[in-house]
Image 1 (tube, rainbow, N blue to C red):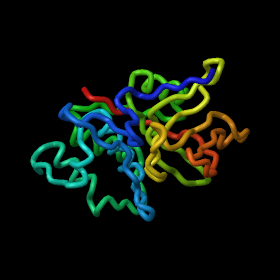
Image 2: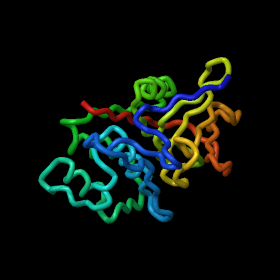
Image 3: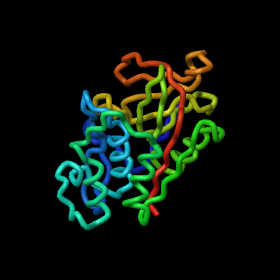
Length: 217
């Protein structure tokens, strides 16, 4: 029997994927939808991860009205610079540096690169400990950032897919994820994993380049 596990901070309630507000009182929508013309997938994915672990609220980013002398206020001001427009995208090193600079006293970030070893086990360990993971997937000379929030196991309890929130896809309404990375399904050595949205839209085959774990200290 196939089984899945999602991090315990998120839940689907009447068609809305929500998590708890940073105050601990009330719920907020988790998924943040990327604009069709910008290259800010890493900024949107970072925002979702920080919302999930209770560092910032979605409304903080939308309103951008936190006190500018607080670490969270400075971080959000930097995050939404140029209205979130990142014409050339951002690397995970950029994301880690930005996060550590402003939020290093309250969060811990760890980058794991594909060349460092078994990136799948790194991701699995984070999810099993209920921590969201930013994931950089590469395809045909391009890159994209998503957030891993769950794992799918096959009937033999072998990891079959990563369950993710993709800022480029529609907000999920029937599950806690809106895309999957099926593990080693393409047969390609360079791009061994299959990426697709929950609506069945075909996506390129990918490889997992980097993962960025973020947790509250």
